[in-house]
Length: 87
Image 1 (cartoon, rainbow, N blue to C red):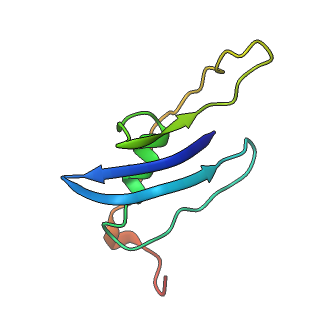
Image 2 (image 1 turned 135 degrees about the vertical axis):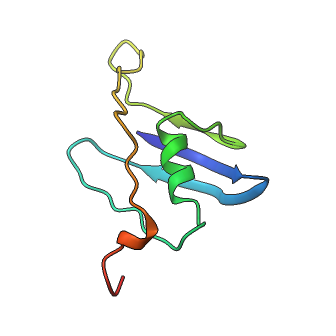
């Protein structure tokens, strides 16, 4: 999955500006940052649940150029009060 030149807003505030992200199958990626920094908005955009203001989200394409069917499942998030101490 590739997020190319993503700009994302939430409630009228830009929280992600021209981001590039490349996620590979079989790899674990951590997305960390303070509350309100755009982590959940970025995850929602990658799952195609949030329309980017600019840029695009691309899925891996097969040899014929069709996008693979992906199961986004649920975009998990933890309440802020369950963050591990010291992080």
